[in-house]
Length: 202
Image: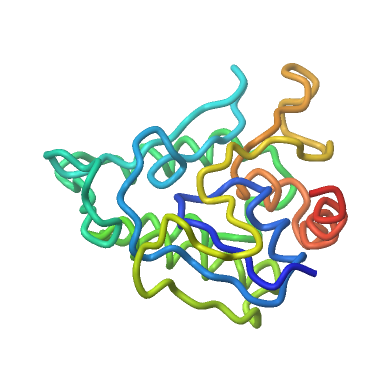
């Protein structure tokens, strides 16, 4: 096993992130980085009849590139939460396990102001579903671009998932790099077993 796994927090993060949770005992979440554009920090990918659909959390106006991640605010003057809920429910209504995890949808009923805090709440809920909530999780105390952690995938594009049944696979084929939502809604309690197997190939 690796000693540490360092990652940034994202919005309903990709499956591959959670596979790495099975390769180490200690998790370190990057809490002092600068916000990065075009990353999963405020964006997630779900399955749709037309292929991969991206959902993005709108941010408050201003330049965010050199802003600390904990200072990034969500733009709640647009009704993005309802749009995301509808997209998730409509695209996964035919999945076998959507109805068993209403807590993942209910998170979007609450108005959050901090992107980091919302992502952390989502992440903690997913860890509980995957029986990973007993992992030892730490937060960075400052930002170190030259960190010495044994594994750092905070800026990695997450591909390479093993195939599993997806809602629209008969039309679109298997789509890699989707949100952990896709795995949970399609595999339910078998998600952890899948992630353990995926971790052996990571």
